[in-house]
Length: 241
Length: 233
Image (cartoon, rainbow over all chains, first blue to last red; front, side, top):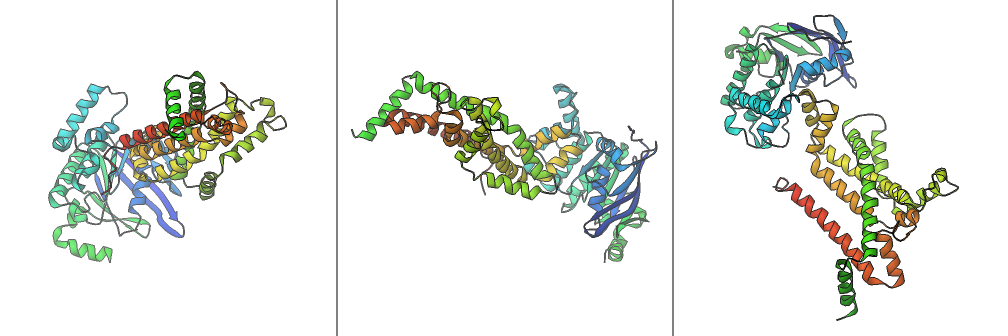
């Protein structure tokens, strides 16, 4: 049965996943709205990556339902629609052999001709401020550049939902700001963002809703206004240790 | 000039004099081995990919079986297909014994485990994120498979050249299944074996030179293709 991803929200419910004896996700629900950013916070091994991969259609849950606004369907029935609408970025994004341009070209629709492709790539490079590294080998990019190229590559795909797994880990201050700036821009364009991170404070300007994943369950912890650098240490201490 | 120098010079002369019989033998070799590789590459690469990327019961056993098949001598493959294709064999009605088709079958069977085992290693060397990135960026299964193949191209080319080098130089299966019939199933290795048994070393050495030139060309091509990208630090 064909279902369209409704552009206002997408709801995942009753997501369960077990690896061996360990229940990674247990009846987790999430509602993703366009133009909003959800910060997914949790300890190492709490299941954040697994959860994002399930939303992206890359990992099969033991059970789970997706409501696109047109009805509630089993995750398996929506897998293809998820793949068409959601882009998932790994913690360390993978770059294919070749330069930055050829990596951006990968996301473009096959129906575009060469001229249209070049136009779109040029505008994407300008959007992300990547013109100076356009012809660099994608395998030799720094962490910050890699993440921005990956976000730009995802942007060219016109996703409704962008999932980012620890996007600013091991990044210097400037790279982090530039990456978050790109994400803010995407959010303003109406793209729904789900970001997993250990460091909620980095995403203060971006986050609309902070969810904590603990013992397989998601709980709506706090709004981003409460996660400021001042109470960050307290927040991390209370919810990590 | 001693005997060996004179024989080698005769061989080079024979090779470049356009000797029709010699070049017919070379033609049969390339035709049969190229067809065998052409047939075995697509299924072997798909199996190699599945073994590297999919998790299913019996996967490790399959890998062990293909690795074991690498060690099977060509003559055993030849014997197996001889029994299958002989009049009393289950494929006897096909009447393929002592034809080029039989040689192709034998050589395809020989190259298959090499392609699977080396292809599997090549695919395993590619990060799984390559497949996932291709899929999340909208590639269908075929395009994602092609993308991963491109990422693994050096290893896959090495597998292809190794398999081709193995089957074009093997004598056991070709002799048993082809029968060494002049201008039909006589290929380079079976001709070398025959000429050597007759004491006609010049033609044997000339054909041997062709195999060495082929091996050198394939390896040079592989080195060129790999370029500077694989210099170790």
